Length: 390
Image 1 (cartoon, rainbow, N blue to C red):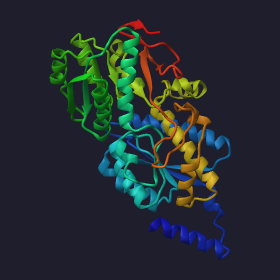
Image 2 (image 1 turned 90 degrees about the vertical axis):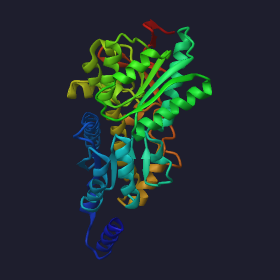
Image 3 (image 1 turned 90 degrees about the horizontal axis):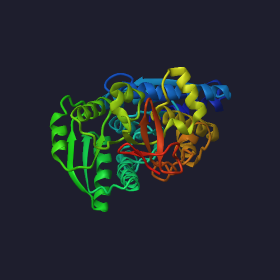
């Protein structure tokens, strides 16, 4: 109601001869990210990418102002989004990395008819029939399915048949949905899941999980976790001389600090990913020069989300949220950061889910992540059990 009232007041001002051009020139976009708390590094990485995209937009003459809200937990999302919409009068919102935060935030964006673009994975985000939320990535179950299938494909190319696997996952919206995708794919392929264990986010003792893994006959382990949990799981495995192939579930497995935190233990760890910096060499070089590390996937994806939002506002020719929403839905953007998304574009289907993106497989090589699968996206050959796979 507040949003509709603001639009009506602006229209009335225009009709009465009072110019609203000054207000229309600057496009205000809200950014909801966890800039503090357990997931702060992801939020900071995303903000870095967003700021790079903002530089590019301003270089092209766009007048865009970003309004940030630090939302470290889901219970802080509603108030933050309400403030951005009713007080800051943002045109739309991008954010917020963690699926649980995005789910809470999108309740408010839907009620206030505010377009939102996210790269959070959870299936529920675009399966609730909402019209104002858009997912620039595939859904979590798709990531889980491909996380399993890509590993099976590469293992077979290396001459190993996978019959048994283990799944560890955090009990959040992201973890449970992605684990479901792995589980479903394994069942379809006739592969036994010997361990299928959830654990609380921020776990401090993974010894029971790792001891269970040691006693199992699993040939591959699929952990789905954010950063701190990812470090703890892999470090404990390797310290206990468990050298099974590890196939991470994105999130904590594909950020620069993963290798910094694990050193040699990170080598050859796989992960599913929504994108990788080696698809955008020029932007990746800029990012590394500016921030001293490679460009993480969340930086690339949220940069693409911002560019898509701003382009949609330009196409709509107005800040009317319904028209901006329709422009987002109809736009297929294949340049800028969107070109780095697997599939080469940002575009959305009827539910708001990406219509073009697909997951890729990346693998740690020293301090870098390289894309190794599928073949059409690969920049280096995969390695399985220390051997190069052709």
